[in-house]
Image 1 (tube, rainbow, N blue to C red):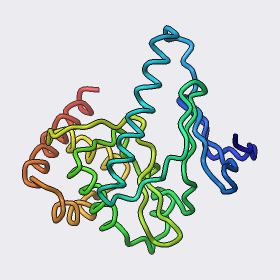
Image 2: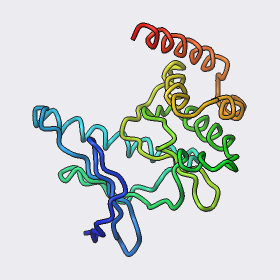
Image 3: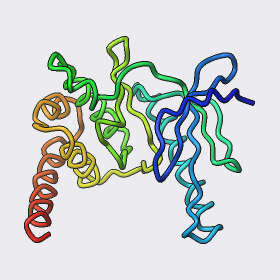
Image 4: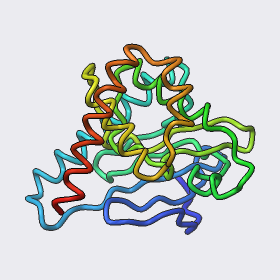
Length: 202
């Protein structure tokens, strides 16, 4: 079905991500790892629900004009998903270059995602790619879900802020595009306050 190149892109507790050949092109294979500490049925159901959520979010966001990788194949039995291979650097690597100036793209794309009521669930700079063509691609929607609640969108922003400061460079363009920006920013301040209290109390 696909040709394994043995080129591992990333490996963690949740999944192995590697480069493969599929339908004559370079693609990315994500294989979700079984959790041995969970009951087998529970683990299978949770993995399946996350794979379904990722497919739904990806399909909706592509319709809304957000650049996310195309999903070519989903195999629930093998826990595998094959995606478009996006050439570029993750944003956390790109930002290490002092000439990085694409914060507006980050804000605009997150705003479009939130306007579609998709919450990423793990919105970090490692889950964004600056392509070789100068576009921003958001990846890894395994923890995504649908929500119209402003606080859920604020939490997405707060997660990003933990690895990208100051967030204002992103928020300027985000606020110009997102619906109900005042309410989301107000909720972000509340989430920040709770986070500071947790940091103080340990």
